[in-house]
Image 1 (cartoon, rainbow, N blue to C red):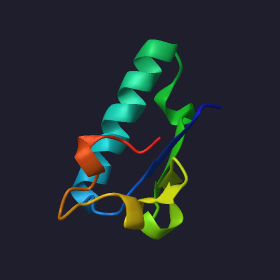
Image 2: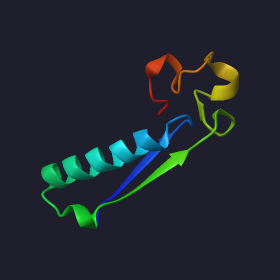
Image 3: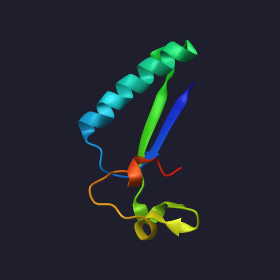
Image 4: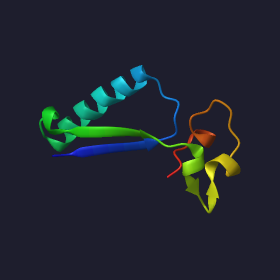
Length: 76
C-alpha cells in the first residue's frame, strides 16, 4: 500500500490540504497504476524551530514574513 508523506512548515489551510489530498491521490494512482483507495497520506506541519538545514535552524537562519517556505523553496 503506497504511503505519501508531506513534511512542511505550518500555514496551509484546510482547503489547500483537501485539494492536495485529492490531487496527490489521483495522480499517484494514475502514474503508479494502483487503486486510489490503497493510497495513504499524511501532512505533517513542522515548526521552523524543529527543522534545519546546513547546520542552522530555519527560525534562526532564514528571513521570512508570511511566506510558508523561505525563498519559495522546500527546505529539504
